[in-house]
Length: 468
Image (cartoon, rainbow, N blue to C red; front, side):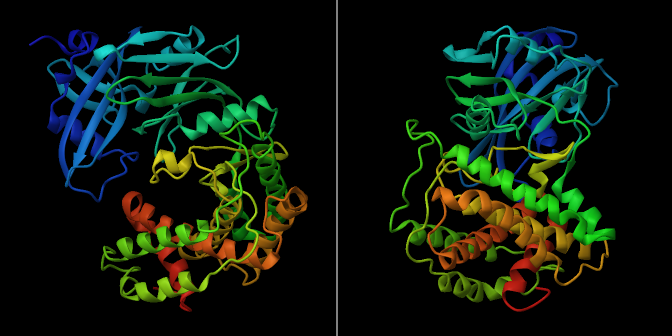
């Protein structure tokens, strides 16, 4: 049998057998289906890159589940002498081993280099991988290191200036993060990282955005960390920054609604049936999720109360003018806002990873982003209590919510993006906060089961209890 390096350079998709592929993918933080039964796993594509140190190739891993659905994940496979770091190792064969270069960053600088050169690589069946730069000059590429954060994708930092974000689970179509960052950057919005380049795949078996290159926000702290630190020693200290975050969020929404000539971004009036459709979708998710809640500490008993949660949903009836539907962040929470210098930088515009990409690219009421941030404030309070033993003042959550909302409404209310009536705004926020709490519970069960008790506790609090 040919050695691993020769097979990698030849694009041999049989270089990795099913057992080895599945063992690696299933152990990753970015694998989003840990609670599902896998039926089959295989490499469906392997495109060699012009890289010798180490040899690299972009691979597509297809993971099939019972009863017939599937996901496609991106790998950046390389070969090296056996004995490298265990975390990035995929499989060993003799004196060589396959590894994932996004896990340890070895050789990953070739991707920004390919973006700068506008490279086009041919793949099997007439498909291609295209690399593009956002401007005429690509910055110098510094030493590479994996970002190391727990997240649903993989990121590599070059020096202290650039960040390569590679999407792991791929879906057909342009990733909303690429679309939104291009739109905001082209219009001079200062509160996002600068988009520098991207790479994407065209042709079978999937057409999708593979990754983006951004300016790296060094020495920043995310809003969730800031909130937890404040709750540990001075809860009121974070309130002015939350007010500023509200203003930045409103400015982002205003800009996303500013181009009436672009059908991808032009604001739209919601239909009379839109709220009914939203409630029906949330109701379906509640029924499906609560039916499979595990009977364990922190969740026991909540599943039996599904009808009470559905009653809360039915009681929310927003009426009258609902505002405007626009493109929005889609997964907005304190962890997606970085405090850098003396202002906020908003990140991670790909939307909620568990939702289909077509839904994440759709227009929604901007209050959905607002509700996500408000849920994150509540999340911070629960984490401070349950995981850090902090004594969170009873009024802190209400004060934090008010600070953010005041900053937001001051900027956005004159723009007619929100409902005309404050009562309708309140009802919509209640609806979207319940939607977000249910989504959080599903996400934690799939990714961080030990944290599932936090959204469960929040849902239970809606039912008049502190613990489920």
